[in-house]
Each structure stands twice: as C-alpha cells, then as structure tokens.
Length: 270
Length: 168
Image (spheres, rainbow over the protein chains, first blue to last red):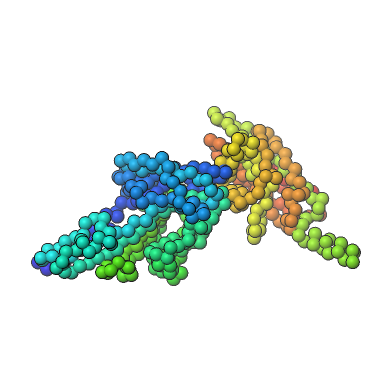
C-alpha cells in the first residue's frame, strides 16, 4: 500500500515535466535587418518538432514586445489559429528588440481525509489560500517561472533589452544573440536572482528536426560564472532551453522553485 | 618653431597614414548570368585586418535612390559586410548604384584611405543578388609600400575576377 502511494506521488511529481514535453517557441521571420524601418512577422506555437506547427498554438495573452529603448510596442495583426499564433512587429526604432513572455504558476498537492489532491492547473500564487482547504496536510507547493524570448535587430545591435530584472532565471548574453555565426563560439551568461547561475543545464536544438533522424542536441552546463560557450555547427534557427531547480521560492509555503528559460536564436552563414 | 611643427606632422604621417598620393584601383567583374530573373547584385567592398577597430568600407553598390530608402532593406543581405561593420557604418560617402554585368572599375579616393596605417590588409568584395546567391572574394593588399602592386582573386558564382592595384 505504502509502495503504491509512493508510486502515485512520483507520477504526480513528474507531471509538470510531462506537460512541458512539447516545446514552446517563438519564431521571427528575420533577426538581422537593415533599413530605416522594417517589419517582422512572428509565429508562436507549441510542438514536438522544431520549428513546425503541428500541435498547438501558443496563446498570445502574455506576449510582449519591447523596443530598443525599453518601451513596449504593439503586437500587430494578431491571429491565433489551430496550430499557431502569428503577429507582426513594426520595427520603428534602430537597435535590438525583444519579443517574448513570462509565465508564472504553481504546482502543488496536499492530503485531505487520507486522499491526495492536486492543485488545479494554471493556479497562481495569490489563489493559494483559497485553494488549500483547512485541514489539509502534507502540503507541497512548487513555484514555476519561465521565460521565452527571442531577439531581432534593426541596424546596429544594442543592449538595453538585456537589462536583467534580478528575478528568476535570466539570459545575459556576452555574445549578442543577433551576432551568431556558424563555426564561431558564442558566450552566453545566465543569472538566477541576479547571481551567476552555475551548473545550469543548457540544451540547444537545431531547427529542421523533421528532416533528421536524431535531435542533434548540444547539451551544456554553465561554469562558475554562469557561462556557456556554444559553437554553432551550422547556420539556421536554434532552440535554446535552460532549466534550474532550487528552494528559493518567494511564495510563502513553497518548498521548491522550477525555473526555465527558452530562446529562439538564428545563426548566420559566415 | 614652424620647422618643428612640420617635422612632427611628417613623423605622424609616416606611421598613421600611407603616402598621401596612394591610390587604389579595383576592377570587379560582375558575371553575366543566364537566369530567369536577374537583378544586379548588391556589392560591398572593404578593407580589414585583424585587430582593426572597425572595417573600412570603400564602396557599397545598391539601390540607393529608391523612394523612402527602400533599397536599404536588403543591405543586410551583404551578410559578412553587414556584420563586420556595415550595420554601424556611415556609408553616404561611398554608396553608388548597382553595376551591370562586365568589368566595373572603382577608383578609391585617397580620402577613403585616410587614417589607415601602412601595412597588410585584406581587400574583401561581397556580392549578394536578389533571388540569387552570395559570394565573398578576398585578397591581400599592402598599403604604404614604395612600389605599386596588383592583387587578383577569382570568384566562382556571383563574382568574376577581382583585380586591385595599389600605387604609391
């Protein structure tokens, strides 16, 4: 009996990971642009294959666009279809733009009257009090915070959009993400709550996976300075994912925090 | 006093700039291509060397006279040039129209070489064609030499022979 409960608990714990098994991605039509002004169109989807829309659209509710000066820009011509969402960004300012979203949530479980219960999907921290009934025991709450971003540059690259908030897992590129070239190493830094994210697992997957038999992922781990160096094997679009777990949640009662960072990066021919 | 100033200027000139009379003549052969849809290539020509703070753009041939600067939209297709410095360069003084197939001559004015130290450089020519390919051709040249010298390199697809002559 005890064994069975343990199994159930394990299955439950693995659920968030299973939910994330599909890859969420934001794909801009171009990342390096010239001219007085320009446009990019952006696809956003959740799928297994990169970058093919064959599973679900990524909803645009939390999607944001930042100009090089830090101001927010419109998502123009929005549409959410069955397999993908699309929108346009009017690049009316020279420099590097950020397109992306942040998702925060909690996973949790508790025992009530001898039965294990799970918090509903999509629960947020401010609902916690009402979601956990009086008399619940063995309450386990885990905070989830992930960012998914991509960058496009009109004209010369700028750095303003990389200014960290100091909260959660963030990407602090040393090599500019719109300055990536096949065969050349790129240095990326990650921080957690503003501090170097040492020992962070970073996985990079090249796009076009439909036409390969293997994922050809590059698995890396950050050094003490929170840095990884990636040498791009070929030009193309890449999907970068970094994940971390710690106990430093700011949500009262949460014992665990899961952090994620995803970025779509374009690597050019030399 | 005046002599001293002149002397100082001469000293400065000898290591910061090549001889003032130096000229650089470049011939770029734009190949005639038998394709269904042909557009003249965008071409960037520049000098670079390791450790140089920024490349020196000598010429950019593109649709520079379109309404609302629309021709600039495709400048980033000159990918190598764009990344190495085109994206932050002031190009107004070195731009020209796209060139037709055949040998195309460029005489680089000494003003374009101003401030470049004598020494070895790579001369790079990059061509990118709308609905077509892209190619980069590079060759070593020396600025500030006492003798004139000619360098030559050959493209394979988007560029033909490129010949550069440096005269003191």
